[in-house]
Length: 316
Ligand code: ZN
Image 1 (cartoon, rainbow, N blue to C red):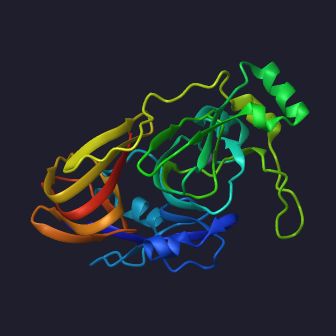
Image 2 (cartoon, rainbow, N blue to C red):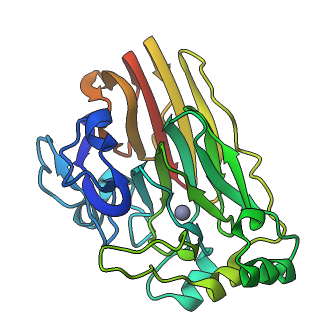
């Protein structure tokens, strides 16, 4: 079975850097490149197929609509997931996302956003914001009124290999010196709480959305039970998270490993270290760090060969 590779779409950001080029060999537009959208059918950046015998140049949104057999004749009207690699040269804004219900009522044609992070690189001491210290909305109002973000925000140190689930309502921010893989619902709805009083290139502060954030933040904060520190097992394919939106697997292969990909699902794949081959029903597909692909729906017997680290996922 032939897999479907995609070409990334880049997003320049005031907090972006140049590690997407040095780490993954991507041709980035500038040294303020914050995000590579590597599998996306979202209107703000749609990825196209590359190196395929039939579909090279086709956009993922068109492929999903027109070639339904690749996706198992899905009932969802739009491709549900979005995969990004993020290079935080500087701190991202502190933010929170709504769930589907809130987004449906308060946004135009957008889903909520459940996301998760696999840390690919972290400078020593690098931190994320994950959660907060307000017990209830009244305490939140006091922190915001006083501008006391140091007391409000909960910061934690991260290392390469850490995994975090960021459910809707979780206050979060990626700190400077971190590169991560993000798998999320295909949505671009972000409520910004704090932006470190930064100015953009035109001298303006970016907009905050404190009222909507207040509506959706979880009080008090609760950690996801799926969060886990670095895992370094060899020749395994481990489930990291299974929630109502997606299931994510992490595989480290040194040599050869047979993996069980269900015939009634299609999978999104990201190569996060090394290189090797994905052999499906006897056909070998070469895979190298930075590449993103979809394994189509259907019967598959799958073996991974090489020295390679993979994240595989499917929508639920
Ligand atoms: Zn987010």
